[in-house]
Image 1 (cartoon, helix red, strand yellow):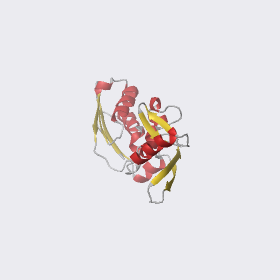
Image 2 (cartoon, helix red, strand yellow):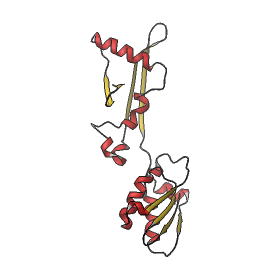
Image 3 (tube, one colour):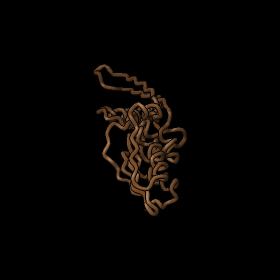
Image 4 (tube, one colour):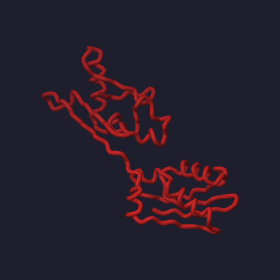
Length: 178
């Protein structure tokens, strides 16, 4: 992990790989007292961030160092140093089960998800009623071809008062949920 900072009296340029450039800009503005417009994030292309580049902790440390130096500063953390202080993505437990009819078509599908919320930490307004829509997105909007079949099945069974639960994760969009 690395970050280059050029802090000047009226502006701050950052060269960093981040998954959250707007958050990075905001926290650096708060630390330096500069306006957000005076903070320029030159974001690197990055791969394999896996959520680690959501935090601006490394950038803030580099800016704190730059506050004591006249000129650009580049701070590099070894992989070992980065892992020691890493903000790991929380672990999740997914349990899937399905029921098939005699011809092998799905007639029931349950996908249970348990884990800590990422949104509760990074975007609290999006974490509502204990549901992290980011955590259940793939379960709620399955790419599997049978999702439309199950939705239709669920609607027909709900009309006959058999057990099928629909939850609204986002306004106007129904999701299968149990």
